[in-house]
Image (cartoon, rainbow, N blue to C red):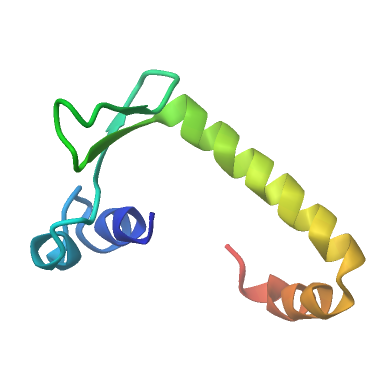
Length: 87
């Protein structure tokens, strides 16, 4: 996922330098469909990220993270110290 993040943030692309150097790094594409897709028989490196599923995954991850923040005082303090820098 880090390679996908870098590709979108730094190159607005599906591939970045890491993909050219690491033959095992997955190449991500994005689609309007609801579900993620991967078929190693068609392409062992390509993963299609469904936009609707991705947004849902982010919402669930944030909800889980906030639950952990409620019970982990050290994490909560780190988050609170950074809130003024969050867009």
